[in-house]
View 1: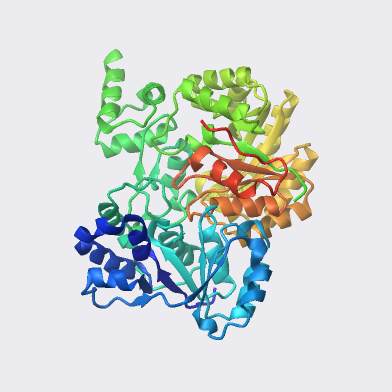
View 2: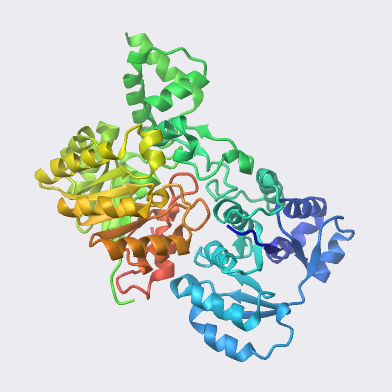
Length: 306
Length: 253
C-alpha cells in the first residue's frame, strides 16, 4: 500500500463541552492532560472554540489547535448528495469545506457518492461522517482509500462522530499507513477520559474496551496457544493491552491446563475432564466466568473425591 | 432493494462466547423466545459438544420455538455432530477452517484432510435427514479461489448455504464487496455474512455483505461476542429497515 498522508481533526474537546459543559470547569487540568494525549495518539489538530480557549488558557504547548472556521455543509442522507453538491458548487474556498452527516451513506453507493464530493470540492475538503448507524469508521476508511485526506473524529465517538481510536486502528492495521501516533497510550487516554466524564465505557469497545483481549472459548484459546494470529487481528501490546485467559462455560481442557500452570497448581491430567465439567456447570449457574480461587477450589474438590 | 434478507441470530453461540459471559439455561430460553416472537429467521442456539447442560438447553429451545429455525454449531467431527443430533435441531451448522493459518498452524492438518473430513461430515449429517449449512471459518484471510473450490464440492453434496466468516474482523466494506461478489458470481450457493467488530465496522461490513449478494446475515443482540463483538442486530435493523422489505424493528425487551 502506497503511503499517503491523512490529517485528523479531533472534535473530542468540543464534544465534551457540548455534553458536559460547566462540569468541566473544575477539571481543566485533566482536560489539558487529555488534549496532550489525543495529540500523542495521532490527532493532528484539536478543534477548539473561543469559549473553550478562554476556559483553558493557557493551552498545552506543542499541540496544534484549530478554531472551527470551515464552512459546514450538513447532509442528512446519502440520497441527498447530488442536490447538496448542486446548491454548494459555487463556494469559492474549497479547502474550507466540511461535509457533515451522511450517517446512512453505507446503504447507498458510497464510493460513487464520496467521489462526487472529491470531484466537486477537491481533496482539501474535510469529511465528518455521523455515527448514527455505526458505519462512520467504515465510511471514513473508504474515503481515505479513495484518496481522501482530511477527516474528523472524536475519542470514543463522543458527540456522535467517528471514533478516533477505531479510525487510527483501521488506518494502521488495515490500510497499513504509518501515522505518527503512539497507540500504546490508548488505555491511558481511556482512563483520563473516564475520569473526566465520570462514566465508564463499555468493556468491549474496539481498541479501548478493557476486555477485548480476554479469551474464553476453548477453540480460540487452543488456537492462540499455537499461534496468536489465529484469533487476534493484531497484537494486543500494540494498543497497550495484554491477552487474558478467562475460564468459564466455553473453556476446553487446553485452557484449563494453561490456567492451572499460570496459577502454579500442579495438576493430574486424568482429573481435568471432571474439573471442566464442574467449571462449565458452575459458570452456567452463576452466569459468569470463574475467578482464580474458584478454579483452584474446584480442582481441589475433585481431588478430594478420589 | 427488492429482495429479502434473513437474519441468523448467534447471540446464544458466538454472542455467549464473549469472555466471562455465560447465560443460565433460563436466560438462554428467554432470549430464544424473544427472537422467536420477533420472527427472527434462524437462531443458532449453541454448541451441543459443550456438554449436557448446553444440550438440554438446546433441546428445550427446539421444543418451545414456533417461528424460528433452530441450528447448532459444530466442528467438523462426528462426535460434535452426534451431540447435535441428540438435540434434533432444524439445521446443523458445520464450521470448517479455510485459511492456511487455521488449517496448518491451528489444526496442524492439510487441505486434503479438510476436504475429506468435510465431505464425510456433510454426508454423515445429511444421511440422517438434517439440513446442513457450512461455515467458512477465517474466510476473509482465505484465497477466494479456495473458497470457490470448496463451494463446488459442497454443491455436489447438495449443500445450499455457506457462511463467509470474517473471524478476526479485518474486512472493510470494499473488501467485503469484492469477496462476496466474487463468491456469488462463481457459485450458486447462498451466502451468509458473519462479521466481527474489531475495527468498529461489523455493521458496515454486514450491510455491504447483503448489498453485494449475501442473503443471510449473522447478528447478535447488542452486538455481544468475541473480543469487540459481532454485528449488532438492533443497529443492522435500524440501518437497513426500509431498504430490504422484510427487515423490521424488534419489540422492546
